[in-house]
Length: 239
Image (cartoon, rainbow, N blue to C red; front, side, top):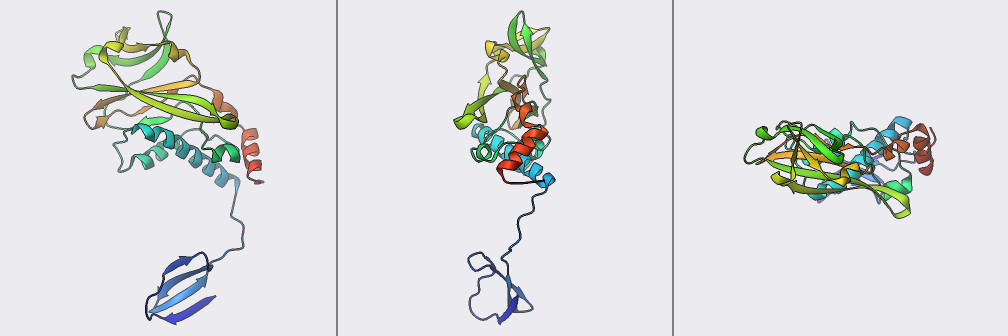
């Protein structure tokens, strides 16, 4: 239904949800169109999967953003993070866990993006002690180079809702040891299979592109077809 009125006086142009109409100007007249839809929102399998992907990326960002991560190759860190996180495996959480902003630790979660050479990381051992081993040679470290260590921990919150919590700290030079000529960090926490790490190089306003390395496999149970169907069921979706 359309109703034309002469454009006299002040008119509200746009959607008016309370009235179920949308108003716009055409050829000098205000046109009113009924905008209330009785149809159900489309929920195909692919749409549901994409919503789960986006919801999880936003949940991760909500926690990571507390530590002001650097994504210098885009105008907004938020949108660049979402673009990079879009490459992660899709995880499926039920509606109650999703509403509690649940999130899952997995390899590859982006924590920074920049134009400095990235640090290659692996979790292992040095002389029997758990270690975070880099490919960075001691003589390659520049005088004003700073290292930021991001730690991601898989926690279970209320009603067993999984949530990734991040921390970040600057690593002092004397904390590193040498392992086959490369810098490494020693700590028993590097044996924790519910934690992950990323070591970011920073020089002024520039940083390296880094993502989380972890032994954590807890997330894998949320990537299956069964997990997808259980999540869809909690939303009353049927594919």
